[in-house]
Amino acid sequence: MPDQLHFTPSEQANALIATDPMALLVGFVLDQQVTVQKAFSGPLALRERLGSLDAATLAEADLETVFRERPAIHRFPGAMAQRVHDLAVHIRDAYDGDAARVWTDAADGDELRANLAALPGFGEMKIKALGGVLAKRFGVEAAQALVPWHPTLGDVDSPQALADYQAAKRIHKKEWAGRA
Image 1 (cartoon, rainbow, N blue to C red):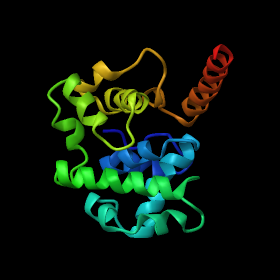
Image 2: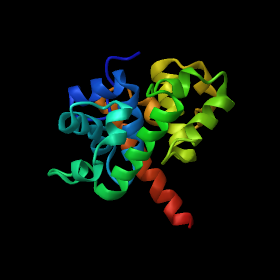
Image 3: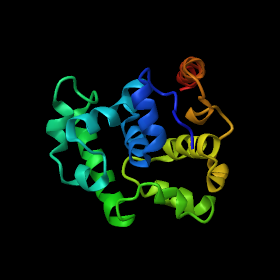
Image 4: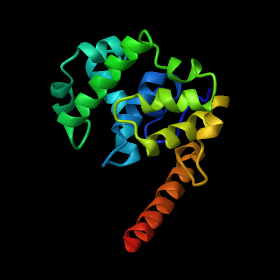
């Protein structure tokens, strides 16, 4: 397990998402219509405001109020508070609150894909991105089958690698937009 994932400018946030599976999943849920840095700083902000990031705490908290507290945790605080709540309820109920079981319980890539697809807010892109992180940063064998051909956050191993990844992603999006 890595000491840090280099997704934010904060060493504390990077350490949290590397060492707390629930924080990692929350970061992926928040990784929508905000920068990677903002999304993956969210779990630390939540822990600071709530005192804990465990699934039961998140499932029982009034997350919308917590998300709206300034500075807001996400650009869309109401919608993202609901997604994090739904994720927490799913982890609490399906995995007894142990977020790591999403991947440790998976016997193979197909089972891992099904586990990830069942998570609220996880579509194909997030499945591949998290698969890349699990395979390349955490050595999860079942995740190897989910790694796409293109770069993902799983390839980010330094602040410079994050900057390079984001620059390449912007170029890729422009190319796709031109084809539409």
